[in-house]
Length: 199
Image 1 (cartoon, one colour):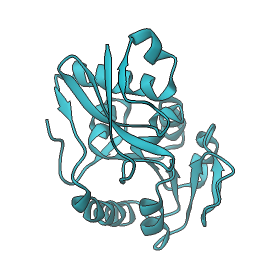
Image 2 (tube, rainbow, N blue to C red; image 1 turned 180 degrees about the vertical axis):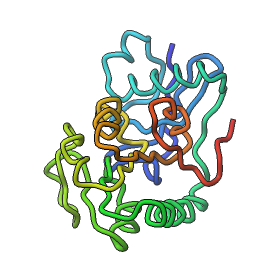
Image 3 (cartoon, rainbow, N blue to C red; image 1 turned 90 degrees about the vertical axis):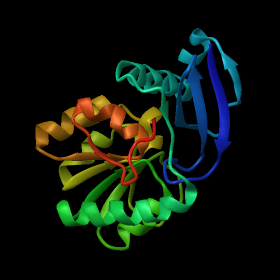
Image 4 (cartoon, rainbow, N blue to C red; image 1 turned 180 degrees about the horizontal axis):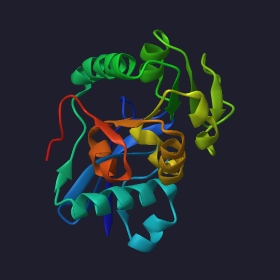
């Protein structure tokens, strides 16, 4: 059974419309962004597979088990402002712009696009003060960017494997921030988490 507890509805790991859930299978637990409408509770594996958010929980927990990690937790909210600043400084110093931000997080976008240009790949129809492109096919926009930045909340909104494949074809680096990003390094995604993974 998959156990899901909703922790909070804000934070730099989340896209708009998401909540942070503690997802557990046995003694393996991870803090994973899920759709805000996801109810806390116990879910059979079959039931979880039918929900994009809960399917992401299962994928994260599977990757975590393969790496021998029992717990992946996000850092405290007071550290997140510093984390965002360090992330933006790192991206601009190492890659510059323009940047393709996959998944809309207002704090990250505000900080990032106050210093460089780029686009946000997210669910269309949102009114945001940034150039917004369709998240269902962000790989179509990779060519225009110097670097691709993935928010952890985008994991259940887009096909990360296809995005990485396209970026590699074009020689574009992909960075993912947050504690769960360490679980995706095997795809060729650069891990960024200045406070490190807590296990």
